[in-house]
Length: 450
Ligand SMILES: O=C(O)C1=C[C@@H](OP(=O)(O)O)[C@@H](O)[C@H](O)C1
Ligand SMILES: C=C(OP(=O)(O)O)C(=O)O
Image (tube, rainbow, N blue to C red):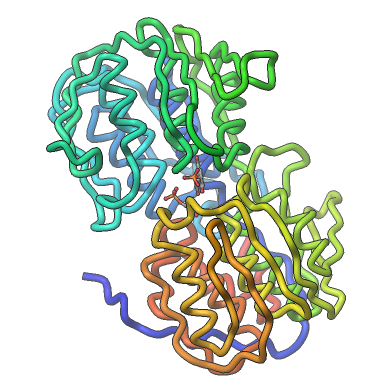
């Protein structure tokens, strides 16, 4: 049993931080790479993967269905500047006939609970899915209803949620399907990722309210194309809200995972709120990761960003400004932006993120309660937050098993004395070494961990 009531005294920054912080690989890229490699017609490599709870659960789920995922140290990836938890590592993925019976623990990983049921529909037996208590509450109906419409048999006890059993029949008819993905872009990504392996491929049409996290759907499309799939998208001249993947074999790839730019956020925020300087090495020039939007967002909030051969450097100017911004494309950045906004010199309005109520926790309620618990003035709106900066004081920052709540609490603790972050270990979902990396940043030794 993990102790999730333990308190971590968030270190106060002794002054302006000045550090180079290598961050481990992207969760979203690693988990897509694993799924695509497992469905490929030949073995592949995932180099410099993120090794965290969410990615180990993905690897475990695939292994349970018969896929080989071997962890090795590889000469190639060792030459890429490394990061804690990832230096020189590579995963060799060896596809096989997918089999059931199997059991998949999804933890509280959206990517695992949404991306693996379509894979399970291709297995030759029943695959049982279950996870943390919160996983039972997170929306899954888009995947369940779509898979049924495409020919799968699923026993979910009528709940439209976990736990459930996908009775894989060895293949899936596939074809056209309509879904409402307004509660999670991962529904669309899930169907596209496995779509090339359905007999008729797949055509996914989103109907319903605004679709969040579009960059994550672009990430899915780019990675599918890089694996040899033919994908038609709204951007490539297709209809709005319609994606099509043609049936066909996927190539085994040799892929190096980019640093996780959303996990770079708290470190960049540290430079912003302390008037310091932080460099994140290996920041990609081209990326579909939503974290790339931080260059613009944190510039508007008062930082200066420079992308060059060293990576991305954010320099704080000593001034932190409020922001009025639609975060629907980059929802996972909201907790970190809310923390910075609470320390700004003017009000912020964060919009377009109603779906965050169904993330790891209800992030809008949690951020409101916890920032206000430190003396802040945050109010929830229908689709976001209004953050009015107030002088903050110390106290316990509860995290609700949400990694991004924990890192948001750490950012506040840099400049507010006496902040104690509950269950900082919950950061292991995507960044297992967070407390050590944070301390190394403050000690100015982060770059030495490479
Ligand atoms: O596809 C992905 O890798 C993700 C998509 C987004 O999910 P939602 O569209 O559910 O917000 C994002 O918030 C999540 O952290 C990762
Ligand atoms: C929403 C997130 O994760 P998940 O992949 O579990 O949806 C997140 O990492 O912010």
